Amino acid sequence: MSNQVANRIRILPDNLANQIAAGEVVERPASVIKELVENAIDAGATRIKIDVELGGRRLMRIADDGSGMTRDDAILAFERHATSKISSLDDLGAIETLGFRGEALASIASVAKVELITKIDDSLEATRVLVDGGKFIDVKDAARDRGTTISVRDLFFNTPARRKFMRSEATENYHLTSIVTHYALARPEIAFTLTNNGREVVNVAPARDLRERAFQIFGAGLLDSLIPVRGGREYVANVTGFISAPRERRTSRDSQYFFVNKRFVRDKTIAGGLLEGFRSVLPHGVYPVAFLFLEIPFDEIDVNVHPAKTEVRFRRGEAVKDVIAEAVRAALSQAGIESDHANGEQPFVVNVPIPSVRDNSSSETDQGQIKFENDISFEVPIASNDVEPDQIEESE
Ligand code: ADP
Ligand code: MG
Image 1 (tube, rainbow, N blue to C red):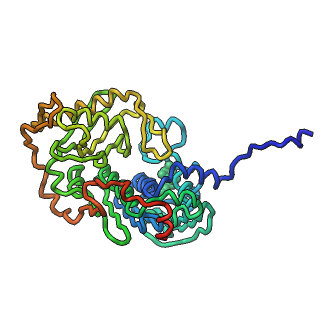
Image 2 (image 1 turned 90 degrees about the vertical axis):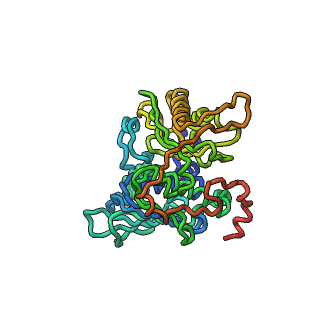
């Protein structure tokens, strides 16, 4: 009798669950690049090569020389909640890897056509796995050196509604170049290349430190105005990195790069601390360039607050903000930059004896400049590049 009652709740099939998760994990091509670059870094890669076509809509291919995967792992990697990085909730409290949710590959493969080729040291053969819109197509032998190459084609081919949200090729390129630049700054020891429709956009050899990497990416012009930052408070945060002298002015925050325990984040607390530190030397609406790296005790932050992992939650946000503001103020004053800005006038710079940060070892990296489609300083007015979704359809 009760069998006749119409129960309505069901467990969603895995692939549908993956596509729903992809809504949060894969916002746009740059999110795919982010997840795959993070995986390459987590696999211990020393070289990461990224090729994209049509702003990532047609193709995104990422090749690394990291650990690679066994055949079984290469198949399992596409399952929902499949990860080698944590095995208990406690692990999350001391997470050293960038990934841990085990949903990136499953999400990406559910909304694109993916080819994975991977090889570990101990195996003669590489493995090639094809997954198409979440369906396993093929697993077979292949050839390559140790490491992993993932090709993601036709993003959102099976989710037309999401495809419409992709912006112009220039806009998507801007975002994915920004992601690669972030990780290139976070990991100076890793070589990165990014090509876009065959044209080289980023090409940086392994660098000794952040300063050399910043030179490789932004060139000598910006480097000359960088001021080192160093500060911290026990149990709260340590901060290191660089800020630009006040003469280097930006109209947006796009040239501010923040990292928490080497994870790239977009964060208002850090941005707020930076601005606070600059308050007396920069007028309202003008932003400095900054590369700020925070080291924060694991029990002081929660990294698991968003599927894309670009946000963190600080246990003591105000204290973190203060640490940054203090470190920035100290760096500016160390560099001889003072201001008399009390009346809200244009601030002025009394003395700017910024140590020259160029050195001989950097000269070999001349060829490693980023060539931005639009503007080297990342001041691309994103909105103006955007086209209406129907124009995107036409361009296909
Ligand atoms: P997560 O990174 O959160 O663990 P992913 O879905 O991104 O989840 O990846 C699943 C697993 O696949 C990883 O835990 C890792 O073991 C393996 N993997 C993914 N990409 C690579 C890679 N480039 N090199 C080696 N192993 C990889
Ligand atoms: Mg991952």
